[in-house]
Length: 179
Image (cartoon, rainbow, N blue to C red; front, top):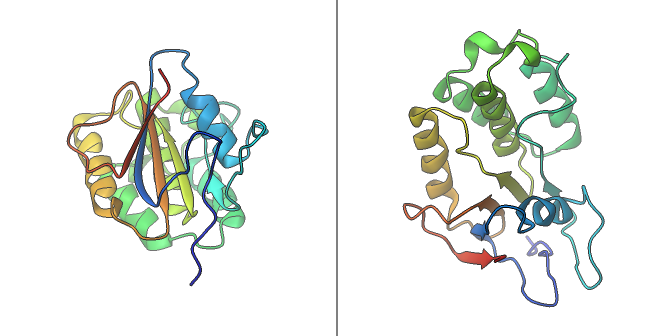
């Protein structure tokens, strides 16, 4: 298997494994993730990876969908989708009772958990998570943290987590400060 192309800028290259992108409010963390995923055009000199995913964890614009509909739409776009992992995350994040509800009916935390579950199950070479702990319950924070710990040393895939600071409980391979 060949090494996937990494996202690079004139300043750095993303390595495989777990990567933190830190910075204060309005420092560009979300824009950075969106450029990695191709949701925003890259800046001059940036080379985005071919297979990256980012999703607004608030799921704005998806109010009339159910979690199952959102996940099916994501599965179509991601050929390495992992149904088994999705089911494990649905159970661990306590989403089973929400699968048939419209997203507008869910709390902010539940909507974010639906989005995180889809992102983690996507199988993308680069998965971008924008403040994945915000507005979710402590048990779900632990589930997400455990997942990220398990994938931290991956040799060919990257999980890029943007937040104000790097979670000190995670074994980061790279920390990028945008301050």
